[in-house]
Length: 147
Image (tube, rainbow, N blue to C red; front, side, top):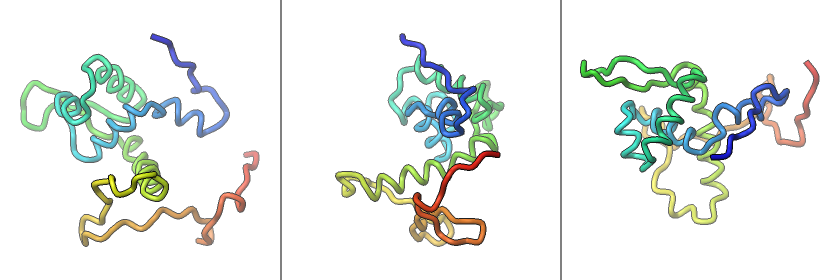
């Protein structure tokens, strides 16, 4: 197996984020956690992922503070995987990826679900990047500045 180069010390925040969550299996595990999956066997069943790969990905997500383990809610000897505040912070990223796919996928008719507001059952509005004053921003209206 080829070891991936770490981007942990990179000055770019996008590269640093990808170091923690850039693997597609990790993002899919996080998606499943948002959908309420908590057990190793349930992750494996829903993703169809080999046990050894799932073990490595879950361990990395726990080590990075994205998931935590806690005693199983049913009192069994199993451990549940739960999103930490850091993991819950990934929700807008997953929504942005979803919305990008809904807009640009070559076969949008094959997308079987849509994200809705749980209280009202209405579709979630497209994420919008805004300036501090609330003005919508396009990519050409942003730049990078030194801290």
